[in-house]
Length: 265
Length: 160
Image (tube, rainbow over the protein chains, first blue to last red):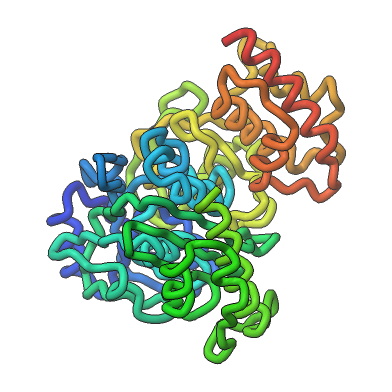
């Protein structure tokens, strides 16, 4: 790792003041992406601002129609919270499939969301469940949040405080994990809440996206066969040593079909 | 830049000062000479560096010493009590759950986490294999490792 200054913020305001006073700042939540990135010398922040000591930023709250996950809640908690498991089982399952148990004890929803890794799981849930990302200064709708590879609507210095999920009538999540890293080669979250149908895809493109053709087909019949023949164009999809764009396009259909099957099971 | 911290390691209070960028595993191994915690991959994949922070398994190669300020750390050296092996260590010995032994400290720390998460449940092989996904044994000696964890879970659940 290159040298940096470590700063532990005790409030959002202090984090922002540390941020504004430094040349090349970087916020850190669980550090499960940032630290490996620093170790590979792929980033060189002058200041790493740890948000771990900011109070009231971790926990899950479930009401009759909403699940609220505070930004620093680790994946292990999202996975094992009994109320959340009852409200949105697909979301609990998604959190339990991220990395491995040790990573899930440290990694957080806020960190993962802010990072917008193209192969991360949470972005599929945000887009596929129509969540709202809350920050220290505003609320950002799911459809406006993810912009591109590692790029989000967050402004310089903006901090995610929580993510709120409307509880769907039903939802399902399926991913085809990279067998070594457990990152998504493709992951699909489908959900239905009344007439609102969403299909959120991660792993396939530069960032999470919806598939309107599948949503329209599911609106007339919410069944796996409705999406089974809908092909996605491989144009512009991710391509690497693990999977070609064509393969990823193919997997979107397969994962969507399985996610719908899970949602209606 | 350096940072001051205080933590508890295997029950003993530790106060220190280290570089901001020092990883917990570096401090444990190089400053405290607790070399039972191994560094296998240094990219948070292999799990050899697993220790417990406030009772939960984490990868000590992917956390800064500074982040552990105020926490309770348990390493493989802190498991045995009064010369008695921890039930998990004992089960690894009884079941010959190691070949070269390099991954063993991380396996044991991670395995205790598995049993803790399923306290009071009858652990099955599938669960153990799935939850060992963050620990690699390059000798591929998983068979006896899984056997040892299942055996230890019986003992640990009885004594709980």
